[in-house]
Every structure is written in C-alpha cells, then in structure tokens.
Length: 388
Image (cartoon, rainbow, N blue to C red; front, side, top):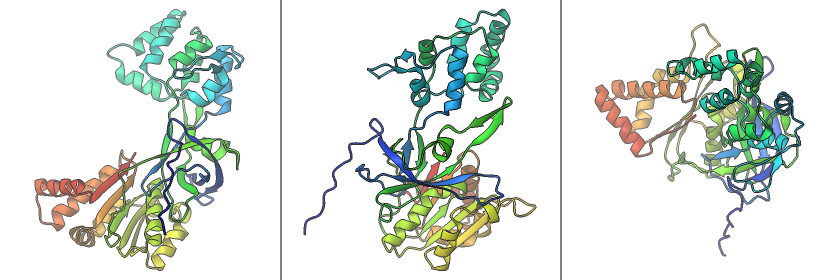
C-alpha cells in the first residue's frame, strides 16, 4: 500500500480560490442583540488543505450602495477606466471601488490630498486645523467616525477625478477568520463563525465590509468568494494524550469547535476543558447544543459558561477561571496547554491577568516568579493565544 501524496494547491493569497457559500445560518436565537453567523464555504476542487488552528482569508466586496454613492458624488458614471497598482489591465471605476479599494475609514494622507484640492476657504481652514501638529487626537476621532463618502460630502469643493480618487485610496485587504471546523470531519468545507458588524456613526449606518458581505450579499451557491488558507502557529499538541484548556468567548469559540472535532476524529485520550462566554445563555450560546452534547458524552470533560447579562453582576470567562483556580492550577501543573482566542483589547488582557493571579496564588509565587512561570509556558507553547 502506498501513501497518497497530496498535490499542493495552486491557490494562495495572491491567487485566491473562488468558493461558494453552502450554509449561512444564524447562531443567535431570536431576541438576541447580536447577529453571529455560521458560514460554511465549499473548497472542493480547490486543492486547499487546512489544519485546525488555521484561518481562512476572505477577500470581500464593498456594499454596492456605498459604491454608487461614491460614484455619484464624484459626478462619474462608473464605467470610467482606471489603473490599479500591480494590475496590468485597466478596470472600471465601479470594479475598482467594489473589489479592490478601501472606501471606509481613511487616514491622514487622504485628508492631505483633500486639502490639496479644496477651493473653499472655510473647508481649507478646517482641513488645515485637523492636520495641525496639535490636533492629532481630534483628527483621529474625526476620522474614526467618518468614511470616504462622509469626507467628500462635508467638503464639496474638493474634486477628485476617478483616477485621482483611486490613487488616494488604500487597497481593500482580506479579512482573516479562525476556522471553526476540522478537515478530518469536513475535508471539502471550511466553517467560519462570523459576527455581523453593524453600527451607526455621524448619523449614518455603517456595515462591516466582510461580515455583511458574507452574511447578506453573497448569493447562495455562487462561486464568487475569493479565499485562501492562512497558516497559523495556534496548534493542538502532537501528543493526543495531552490535556487542553480552551478559553474562547464570543466568536473566539471558532477554533475550539475545530479542536474538539479534531480530537474526536483522532480519538484523542487527553482531557478537554472549555470556557465559553457571551451575553445571554438563552440567545447567545453559540453552538450550544453541540457543546452540551460533547459535555454530556464525555468529550468535554469540563465546561464552564459565563453569560454576562444573565444576572445583575456581569460575569465573564476570567471570573469562571478564578472560581476554578485550584483545578486550573492542577491542570496547568500536569502539563495541560492553555489556549485563548478572541478579543485582544479587553478579554485577552483580563484572561492573562487572571492567569497571573492563579499562578501567583495557587503556586505560592510572587509577581516576578509568576511572570517568569508564564513566560516559560509561552516558550514551551503551553500558553497559546489567537487574539484580534
């Protein structure tokens, strides 16, 4: 018997595969304040291979309504030919704005290009003030609440030709989503857990470019979603008897759904402990039926949940960690690997602080000793984070 050699895929970030969405299912129950989707993407016939812990890169398209607004304010038709960096063949203005350019929030360089073209004195004065050396915080706040269309509407004397606008915009970059499936169970699909972003600033509704593209603007079954696999160092242990601890609130649950599927497929003997949190259990327990089934069936040896809005005092995953400090320390001491996935700005910092406290108090260490212990965990890949 010969081992089958897999041919490397011809598809990559520079040559993405045009995939289709085969499932688009809302994970939050009716009544939730959130809209989180389970998106299944067909990669059959692509040759793309992924491992649990990897991410899928998705090249989105902008909202056609936003593109139409931008074309209208330019006084253009949309069929004007423009050239893009690294593109030998010119494309239409509409194609450039739809598929290739970031038309959302802009930067200082774009304000400078507006100042060069402003003919109204009041507009020039305002732009000069925002660009002044002492107005950095004001400029940052101003740009945070505005997209390209807002800036042009607020400065009607600024006139760009289609090519000048294209030259002034940054390229639309792919978004990376942690993969929520195991290739051992789903070799021809990639599952994603996508939080659909919608918010309002400056009296205008905003849409997350990629999240609403996947959730609302891609036709079911249409081969139109450019994707590629982004490799990661966020990996399960080679030893299937090794115990793992997973902390993944919200969409941070994605890789851990994949981890559990993989451990089942490999018949791993190591124990599995999951911490998950969100707002309300009744509405926001993402993949809840799956995880409850895994727990009841013994695949998940421990399952600790934190739903912040189900009681007066907000409870998060780090609080559940501290409540289980003694058991967590026992698991860590016997070589378990701790994984954290999700929000980098707050959650990951709070979880890290909880870990330091647990090591310090349960291990009888001072702050420096605890910090060194956790540094060693990182070095030995016993503390891995996939945060964003």
